[in-house]
Length: 142
Image (cartoon, rainbow, N blue to C red; front, side):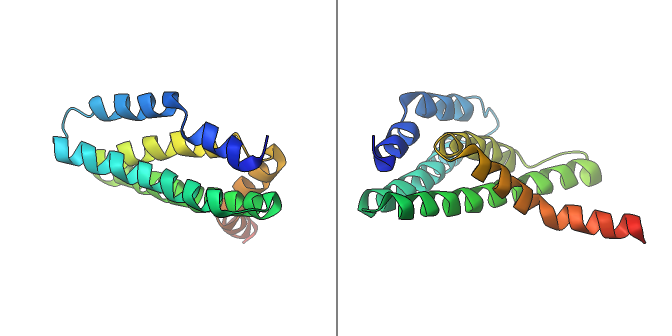
């Protein structure tokens, strides 16, 4: 099976849609408009990814693109989680919009991750955490 077909199957899996819908339904403090906006946002991320995948004719290029998309999504997810953690420590609460955005992105990341080579995912995760790890090593050595 071609990579584009695997991506399409993973990212349009009805189970993913159900999970997203259940997450949004559980957001009791949100308005219908807020739920709809967040649902549209995550689906647009997915759909943009799949639109390029459909145009890409070379599996090697598509694999590279998938890895780059994963890096972008993962970095954004980590950024949101850093904001959430900081808010919890400093203010004792978090913005529910960010909580739900993080949760929905996590599901999208899992779907993309399932298509990538596990060694690549591991290297990406190491790369994204490296700036923090390098700083901590520098501080510990000082």
